[in-house]
Length: 114
Image (cartoon, rainbow, N blue to C red; front, side):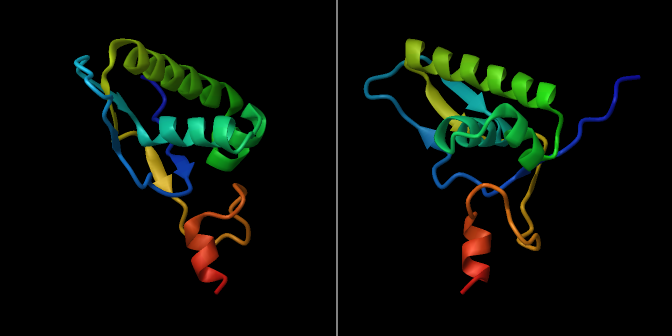
């Protein structure tokens, strides 16, 4: 019997959950919310995989698997001109009750500080 999937902590849902290429005709590629969060943390926020794993509350090899899957999907969408949709996955949203989010301040924490 396989181990149950552990939910990944996600700071917040993306503001845009679909991206359409100009003149694209390559179908739809679905990126999960946890894949989106991994791309956001590693590529945009410049986190290491180790720091990303700490933030998402999963192991580093799990982050590496999620990241590799997300990169393959993004490459497929770019090459084929597919729509990128962000939806689903095994995640839990940051509840805003932690002292520090760990990602530089998610919207929930910035709103709580005011």
